[in-house]
Length: 71
Image (tube, rainbow, N blue to C red; front, side, top):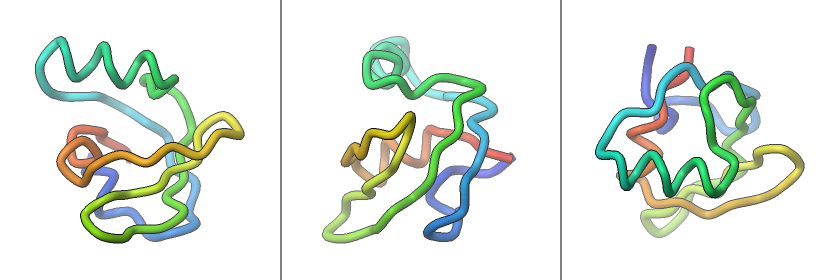
């Protein structure tokens, strides 16, 4: 497993685990970011990452992206 931040732009990845405090995991779940979902990094800029998950684009911080583990 590796953090989402290490994924290449445009490559679809499967979320294997979300690490962090309960608040962080609940926040990500409210955005539809859950284990088993497919996620793609669209772009990275200014300390933020724009991801695509379930046909929706979402901007998250690099620190949050580092808590999303992919394989």
